Image 1: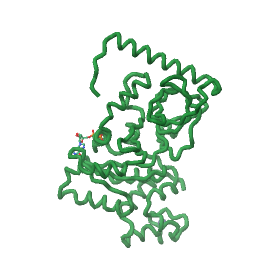
Image 2: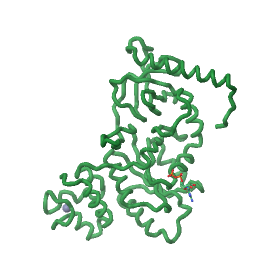
Image 3: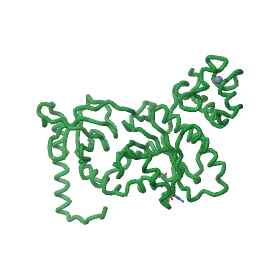
Image 4: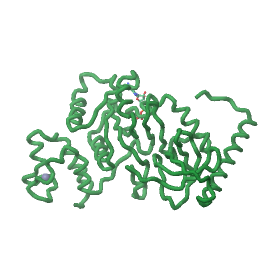
Length: 333
Ligand code: GDP
Ligand code: ZN
């Protein structure tokens, strides 16, 4: 977006307008539904700053909304019912049932919801910095836990050379397990069409190590990013949109992309052995076939997973990562 120069007078007028919108919305949040515009509208939460929400309405029009405490935690991606209180203001009166909820532990160890109704986790990796296989497998466990489809983007494909055969073999294993792997280069715009097709109609979030190119991907996928963030700060009345909060962006071809710096490097805390087992998709046919019904798939005799590795049906490194993750479970069954 071109940065227009505003006069002091214009700035003051905009600030006053923002203030008025905010107080309108705040007042409305304390009112009963009866006193609100009778028509309920549906919308999606684009961003939340404390008690303030920005909602995208049916025509992707942005509305600054407040919500009542009794609605619980509302997060980016939530589908809500709202009532207008002004031209671009409203109050949220209900949260619709979520199809998924991504959360992560806060500093106190409590699960903190981050984004709702996601359908897809896009795991970004690159030849440089090279991926940690363990971390990639953790993301897959997260995807299975939250019931999200997982897709790998191997970015910086322009850097691939003969020395990367082991890396490509690693990703071939993921493909054999049933995950899509897309080679992309934001630098050369390679693989862009395939990636757009995978994101179309989905609600996706990008995760991956720092430096693999997530910001570059967001910029490639959202040519109008500045316009969207500009419209957001204008609607929220909270000044420049800070990208520190999870934010939902509309993709030009349909579908949404939620960007959240906090989630980009997110680590899953695995709490249940069941959850861990389900996190390794290709283990499913072998579970329940070990000699001991409470087999930990470690060094027990008659372990069906160990046998599957020996017969080449499961990659040894996948079972190793499973075992390493199992150690973080402590003594829990
Ligand atoms: P993030 O930390 O995951 O958000 O990564 P960035 O988007 O900040 O990118 C990290 C570095 O990788 C930057 O210097 C980018 O210019 C570079 N980069 C991103 N995409 C590509 C690519 O496709 N090819 C190459 N060679 N470099 C890239
Ligand atoms: Zn076993």
